[in-house]
Amino acid sequence: MSEIKDINLQNTGRDKIAWVKSYMPVLNEIRKGFEKERPFEGKTIAMSIHLEAKTAYLAETLKAGGARVFATGCNPLSTQDDVAAALVAEGFEVNAWRGVDDETYKRHLKTTLSCCPDVIIDDGGDLINLLEGECGEYGKNLIGGCEETTTGIHRLKSRERHGQLHYTMIDINDADCKHLFDNRYGTGQSTLDGIMNSTNLIIAGKTVVIAGYGWCGRGIAMRAKGMGAVPIITEVDPVKAIEAVMDGFRVMKMDDAAPLGDLFITATGCKDVIVERHFKKMKDGALLANSGHFDCEIDRRGLEKLAVESFERKPNIVGYKMSDGRILNLLAEGRLVNLAAGNGHPAEIMDMSFSLQAKCLEYLVKNKGKFEHKLYEVPREIDRQVADLKLRSLGTEVDILTEEQLKYLDASK
Image (tube, rainbow, N blue to C red):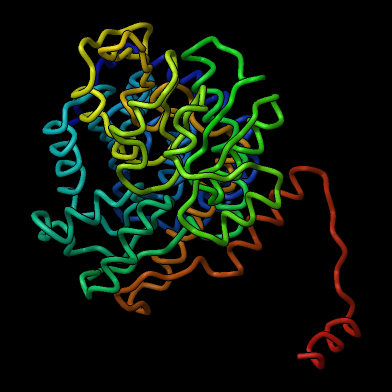
């Protein structure tokens, strides 16, 4: 039995799904194959993912392949209630709504897992954490699953190192067709979209402090610079810091960047990136946004502790007034700003990421019994297939090596 906000919102949700479907040609092609082959016939899939239109179309694609799909959110603020309603109207079981409290969020995760899935899609690692803990009985049928976030992969690798990973998982995040495009171009655009939609302020001319220069941070920095901002990068990895310098950005410690920034964006996957000592140095009117998966990168409790008053300034913006009169503005409660305050990554970008998800789930099901309980890379042939389909949809062709060239390259190894 589904738990959503309001089934009567389904029509606008249906329109959103129809819109993104028009711009997801790779997933459309994969869906055609699924409809013919029905690789998920008799299989149950549980999804914990940002419930919005592109995700809904992935769910529809899996259902077209024969699956029973159970869906919930992976962030309390990223579910779009009209999209959830549209899925329920189509016969999916959905347990999610925007703005759930922590207790309800966890209950929805557990309810979704209670279907005892054959495969899962995880986004941030919450499903696996429950399966490895208090919901272990729900993993009895699990062949494996996919994880597509940097944060989720960090958690899985930690489990694997400590001998605490008892399921087969595929690392979608590090596939070329994911991190090179989703993390860089998707996060870069959607993060700034969410910030601009919420604030109605200009990016040009602002000093934008970006914490983290991984693929997400690079994308944000590239887009901010292209819009006329002056980016500053903070890093803990000296190699990435050198990359940022050679890409033309200033690099400094957050302690030094705190007084300079007009806009701060965290994208590290770590906790306590911006804390009390930084808040004390910031300008009046500074904007604080997070593009990492969990709401722990900006220390909201520390901000609340320093503030003499807090109040909603606009939807998705809370102002925290300091004792000296400065106001610091926290966007989307410190949660993923591109989804909590926007529509997430563009459809054309998620077309590739979700195509990887769909093909990897098919790969798991078709090769049941052949895996160990560990984290696997996306098979190279799946990554290449998605890239080839994407190129074809763009009307673009690449050269093909001749037999002589292949022999030459092989002899050179």
